[in-house]
Length: 516
Image (cartoon, one colour):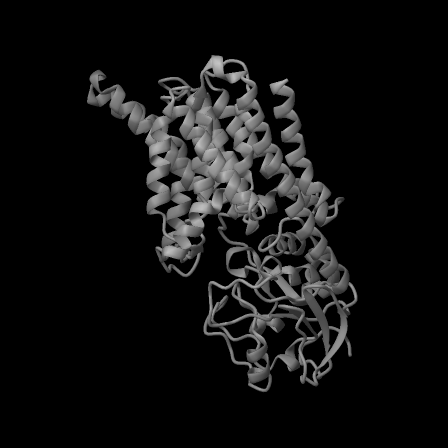
């Protein structure tokens, strides 16, 4: 029965993104559009007029590489659904695999890592990162089974795995390296009586799989200018409070906070009453993750949201390390609590995906009414002064990127700085890698300003919306409280939905592809 439950939950968490292919929002549409561009650019003249490819060393290409065997015969939405399903399954199955080490027969306790799959990184659509974390945890599991001295065959496999992790996502590679470094230092300390020379020999032997990706990382930092703008910020009280709730924050309130607190209370109760023990081999990793979660800044190396990415990983490892006593494993009460937690998480997660898929599908259908090949500006109603006040449409921040797939359009903020996709020369002045949509006030104030040249390629501070009626063909307005844009004679409403209005820009576009 427990094995069947684990298999069933794994199948369900894999199938959810296939049922709701746009059920993961925020950054995910950008990644999907970027992959679409790479594999359709040479077949679509309109797309080629908007984008070019600039290949260089890029350490976050998990979805891009996954799409290679499918790009010619599956829709981008199905490819994205398969990738997202595999990502969730990797995270869950890695927790199950680590929990089963020395645990004997599988129990329903192995289901608990599933609740932490629905975390803040998932809510933000950081799928390359989550995919690499799942791989990293599986590599750690494989490493732990290697014995005191790893054979060369296993080292070769692990070297290939580290290279794969580096290109899947840099943070997954760094996490795996950090955890394995802790394991190896702990091993060297335990075996210190064998002599320093022997300990160092084994340690450096086991570190050889990291040589190639570390050299690539050095090249990335020193010769290619890094992975972002280099800004570092630890964050404030608000960001750290959000990071505390992040392991289940993809679930709707109150389900997310209640499931997180109930899970922590359950683990604490079992350990406090000595009804469970911690796997001694995984204990160093728990301390290492605690240090990482506390010390992690909000932004470093140009990568934002670091502090809320790792608490879920720490809790997956914690649950995997807990070994309930054999007498407790089959009790009806514990099984009922586990079933309630996991069932509620699956239900709440499925409902959240269904809601986001419904909204994104509505925006997708609206964008199909635009003329192909033009440029789309995304703007939104919000308070630009309150940076922490996310509007109701925040989950659909990058929904305009679906116009790339549906109508081969140009859309700013497509993460061009961290991908091989770049703006074509005719669109270079409209290109910014990331940012926040212009507000209504900005649209009104800057519609007659001259569009300047960006200070550098992929400049995030470039005001690409200056003179927007002359450079864009359509405007997707993400509205707050049903608001519309009134008094802008350049706009003609095409269609609308609960959270958006699509306008055609009637002023003559300087570089538009609509053919008006």
